[in-house]
Image 1 (cartoon, one colour):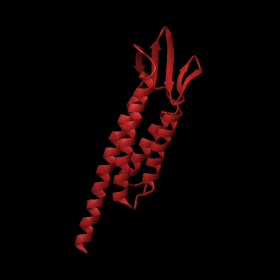
Image 2 (tube, rainbow, N blue to C red):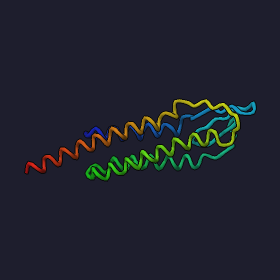
Image 3 (tube, rainbow, N blue to C red):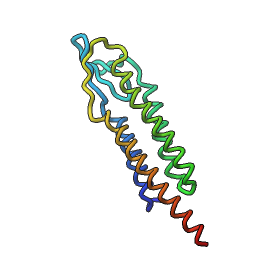
Length: 147
């Protein structure tokens, strides 16, 4: 399981997604106040303005999908289907970050942190894992033809 490159891609993707739990996503400047967006929600000076529970649930689901996919190494085609679902969920997570950043602030300046790029990096890792899984599947099929 661990010797396969796609497992390493999925493990790295899970670790990167876990970093979103501890890193801030954006700083929002609106109406002479600075707000911080992280997985807990939108906060002003430590006081919670908007709950980030949907973000936390969404992110937890994406991490769970990646961890489950790691352990489905014997079912390669199912892994590919689940990774396509994970990519769709990551696009949803990415758009949810933008929605939280711009939802209640008219004319606000939003300064996104490097954390906003993590879903894009994970999408690339998922694509690489899908390619590696497809390569494994074609190798197995070619060996079946030889027998």
